[in-house]
Amino acid sequence: MKVHVVTGFLGSGKTTFLLNFVPRMARGERILILVNEFSQLGIDGPILSRGGLSTIELPHGCICCTLAVGLLQTLEKARFELAADRVLIEPTGIAVPSQIHTLLSQPPADGWCEVGPYIGMVDAGRYRQMATGLYVFWNDQVETSDVLLLNKIDKVTAAEREAITADLSARNPTARIFPTLYGVLPESEWDGILAGRHCRPAERRHAHLTPEQKRVECWDFSSSEPLPRARVEAWLAAMNAGRFGDALRAKGDVFDEQGGRHLDWVPGDVHWTEPVGQETRLVVVGRDLDRNGLAQALAGG
Image (cartoon, rainbow, N blue to C red; front, top):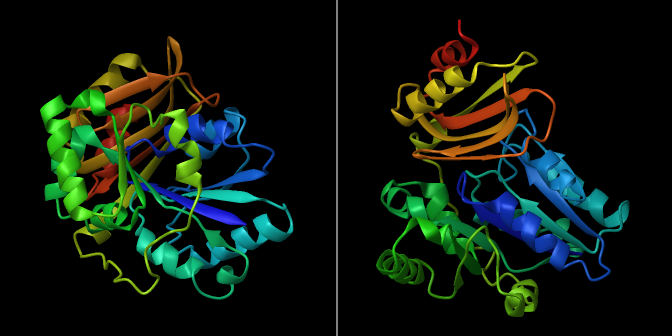
């Protein structure tokens, strides 16, 4: 069973890439997507399922540490019970992929997993913030990937894109780098992305999260009642201003007096699409989050 890891920091475009890429690679194979989310609320899994993709969810933790056993058990099920030919793993955005590779390169997984190239998503618009922010997991994601997709290139100038590409090449000289919008690759590159094996040795160094990274936490919110749209907009503006701590990512369905929308938010950038569910279900990931402030501002308490 071929296994690929699609890694990338929070909001870099992993789910969108999978929606665009997987339907083009089927070719008679049984393909499963293993979705790992930091929160208890599964947000990405239903999006992928709505897109016609077969998914298995591993929520509420990270497969590189707290859910490592669950990852191995799920892969074993995919191989022997579900007869999958290929599995694409979408870890949480704060995963350390070199640790995932260690799990896949030792017994029992090495007996039934062929680890293919790791695909890393990089948000061009937030590159400077990530590259200078001492995010250990972001550095590991860049250094571990065999293929790097410099995504959201519409957020930067041509000169900035060239500088970012040069910096990525310096950080990972062996990776193939492609500029993308919405994670869409040229059709001529599909076979090359899927072929080969992960080229990083399993004994490579492992990243250790500093106390700063360990402060990453998740806040979940659900409501069956519509929220006033003006209140939602004010809540997003307050997050952009840093009023609720260091919010890094917000996503999920929001229902207001005008109907439902699906939210994708990173600092300074918001994107709305069609909702997946029937009620408000939101997840915020960040550091030192003001949980009471988030809840009161959104619920109107």
